[in-house]
Amino acid sequence: MSNKDFKTGAVYNARGQQIRVKTKPIGAGQVALTFVMMLFVLVCLLPFVNVIAISLSSKPAILRGAVTFWPVEFSTKAYDAIFRDSTMFTSLWFTVKITVLYTFLAMVLTILMAFPLSMKRLKGRKIFMIYIVFTMYFSGGTIPIYLNVKELGMLNTSWSLVIPGLISTFNVIILKNFFDALPYELNEAAYIDGANDFQILVRIYLPLSLSSLATLALFYAVGKWNSFSDALYYITDRSLQPLQLKLYNLIKGGQSIEVAVQEGNANDLGSSISESIESATIIFATLPILLVYPFVQRYFVAGVTLGAVKG
Image 1 (cartoon, one colour):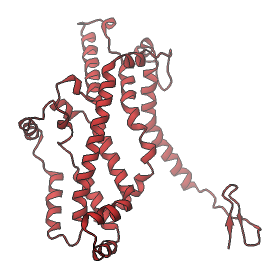
Image 2: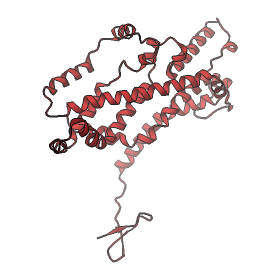
Image 3: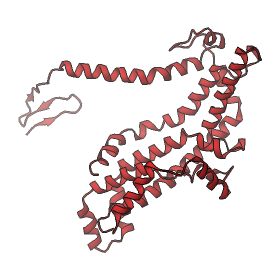
Image 4: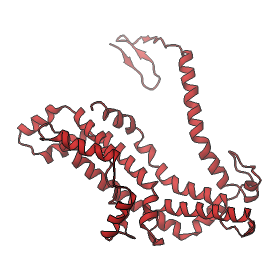
């Protein structure tokens, strides 16, 4: 029997003698794989670094194209302009509330749909699955959805950003497959002991599915946080504009000014929306959801891969 000293990493046998552990040499394949992975990391990271550099550079340096991955003529005027704008924080707080409410309701509906479909005693569950999968390929379209939202009186309300698209068929299938991967004997044993379906769900299935639930919750939260098209359709009140719609309008306004400058209809000095402000707004809108990732990243592999064990 051997023991391992976790502080030093050394391994000792029963007599207290250190055992030499042979380490496998690093092969050319591992080196190549590491190089490719680092290359992919750089491809994903460098654009974000460029946006940060632009947000912290002066306007003349940006106009002459001198900014790459390091701020040139360091300036925080873009962030000063954002923090002086009270509507940015109003949109931020509104986006946080919408994201939390949407994620909570979406997870509740996803669980309540996936759990019955994983029960073998549910009659006709294959037919229900066909109906659910059908919605992944065919939908009513944007105009019918807009007319429904309008007829229900949800235009210019928070519910227009929550109820439409409240549940994802893809996420239902992932969670249903995860529930299928759990030992069905646990369900049968609890059912024999007198537990009802709600007790089985709350006391057995949900505690064993935390990794999958955390992954799906992050999918819902990121999707809602980055969404602006629904607000573009349903919201005209500026006080109800989420952060991503405000960013969209800001970039769209900056592009309009740039076209006007090129056509000679405006002067560059009159442009109040600079590329540095756009970049700073992107960082301002990205940072909150980015801070959530480290806390749930470890659930990604376990949550998604375990949910893909069964079909």
